[in-house]
Image 1 (cartoon, rainbow, N blue to C red):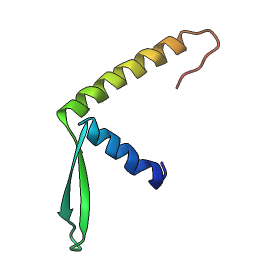
Image 2: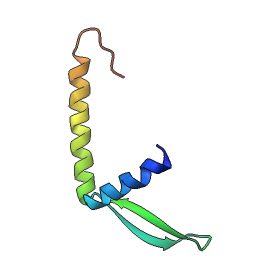
Image 3: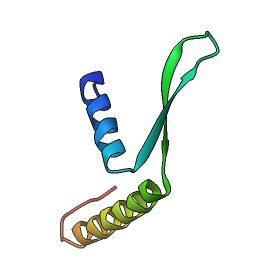
Length: 68
């Protein structure tokens, strides 16, 4: 993932309240933004993972298809 797409993605996740962020000092005394997943984000992740697994199973059932 390129830097130009990472931060817009993180900001979208914050707007959806799937991640939270806070500014903190690093060990080198620099200001940095730290992100963590929220409870709502964990629920969304579980839903997406479940749908992904269902799709992989469905595609794997198509003759001549190999899904790894």
